Length: 340
Image 1: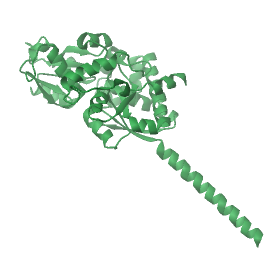
Image 2 (image 1 turned 90 degrees about the vertical axis):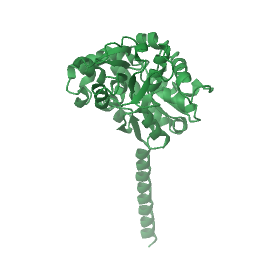
Image 3 (image 1 turned 180 degrees about the vertical axis):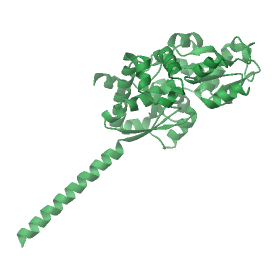
Image 4 (image 1 turned 90 degrees about the horizontal axis):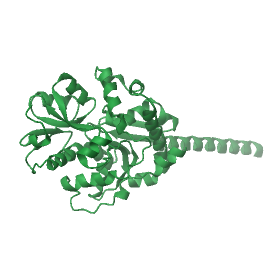
């Protein structure tokens, strides 16, 4: 009898231990599910997000990453603050802007050191030869409060235009941006690849200001402008360092892939619909612009100051505020990833 009870107890304990192990494993897997919102993942500036997925680097790190698409970075930021997602692939300047509102987020992987954007001018307005000629015109941006909006206002001021002498209109990117140019709703606007190449190829627009390379960005903005990044709430980063490290490992490997492979090889790893029917144009644009990506995810030393200078002039949130730039990014994870 005792023997039977002992056996039953042993079996019960074994079953309990097995159930506990399964529960623990399930919890571990659940903890490794990370949702990241991308401010338009078909845009070449945010290419590392889909590329990391395509290369299988998230799976290699044992993390289940879901990428969600959102056309405007400012909306992705709102999703992060609402707790709907754990990270955003968007412009670093949101980290500066949010600190001014008392919200602490930080870039944990810096994808690029140039915006990768251009200011296009409509072919219907051949009289526009410089930014100053936009006086009285309407310019397209992805969204009000977006990075494209701040950069547009900054370049307008640099060209001598006064506040109110241009109007910025939120038109998104891709098809909605193109339609706004075609319909004459805007006379120019800031956008990225592959929209740039599509409009230039059809002759409907031409490049007025180019922010796709580090050198041209320094010329236009006065310094390196760190843009595309993976940013997350600081509190979440501090509480989930293991998961953040795995993300950094995956993205640093992705940036290395970008820097050691041709545009054609990179394009092969991307979803085919990103070519928008013009694979050759997609590759050509990527070849011209992939120098904007950092080789290792580390924040450019002079970059945060340039971003703060732009926002201090045109963000009502930032103007006059004391910003601790050291708290807007961290290189802890990418530097550790480089040694793995």
